[in-house]
Image (tube, rainbow, N blue to C red; front, side, top):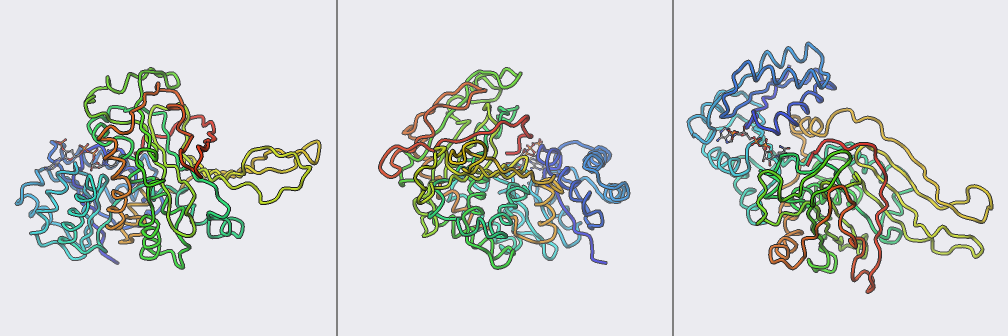
Length: 481
Ligand code: NDP
């Protein structure tokens, strides 16, 4: 039998480990109970071995892993207390672990960089893989430097840059939806599609995460990372095989061809920040009054960037990427707006509404809004909704991503050059915002956001509406940015 893979979590007592990694591992093991994995947690926190075991047990049990699987993993896990920036502590820790090893950095980004520098000088078990979280650098230059540093530790084939959006089953469903039926594949281009909205609006506000969020903001937190990955998957050419090399190369082609709409960061971007308001039955304070917020940073809680994929398939189609917090509508979706029919018979009474395809990311669902004759006068058109719910995901996005990392499969990981491309795309926006060339627009918490964002100046020379059609969802899913 193959040796179990050791998952070393650095930062084991932190928020990511507790809220996402351990539950993700539990959901993976609930589905794949015979997976051979051993977990070692390391952190400087004073948590004892028993507390660690209890935490692991609770996460696995809550995720529904079988009792025998839970007992086996809890029985073999251990917790190492220490400062991983101390070279001797790190040497001893890594030296005590057997191959194959996955080192998961659940540490603050600056600490991760320092630990990587120390790993360069250590002998690592054979085939060691590194798993890193966002943010991957804070601009193109730092991302390139981090790439170079990581590649001095292990080759690129063993580096996993994690983006859990790639583990969301409705995002992965894009591949099946696009390429496994004859209906959509032929119309997936600028010949038939007018525009695409990729939206991730949440009703959740800051929820005590100022330490991280106030320095990142909506653009870096969501658009620079997750939403550009969704765009790449949406717009890529058809892969011949579903393997990491092919899919990631096709996605990288899309990102390399992606530019700001009109190549102007001022007209292609919008930013907003919530003020006091009410979301559902909760009173939300003004963002600047939230604990830990530094008003001088001018952090945006809502961002929109319009981009164009400048290749023959997509040029001329605006992709509107938007994400924000404390909003009334919980829109987590891709909306594909089709062009009007080329020739409609005279005498038909049009609805005036475009045909649309809505892919709800959370919870997963697919809806076609199509003009057709439905009831009454056969020449009077109306829009009908053809709706299909996607089944419950088999595991959490972190479970999917962890599974592929433990298998050494990079399909769900971001390649080094793609991380740099994503920074290249948003860099002019960040600069324009720093220079205050784009206003920071206030919106009351619980509203739909500032008005007027649905007009893209310069589209075909004239201001045009890019109206978003939102749907009501009964409840929000946890903040997973
Ligand atoms: P936390 O601060 O909650 O956890 C980090 C942990 O690392 C803390 O327990 C911290 O200990 C420990 N640590 C820091 N320095 C050392 C050291 N030198 N030696 C040993 N342990 C150390 O951060 P998060 O869990 O929130 O984030 C971890 C990473 O995951 C970050 O890169 C973040 O950007 C990323 N991420 C987080 C998400 C989240 O929802 N939390 C979502 C997506 C990505 P101490 O408390 O004593 O400082």
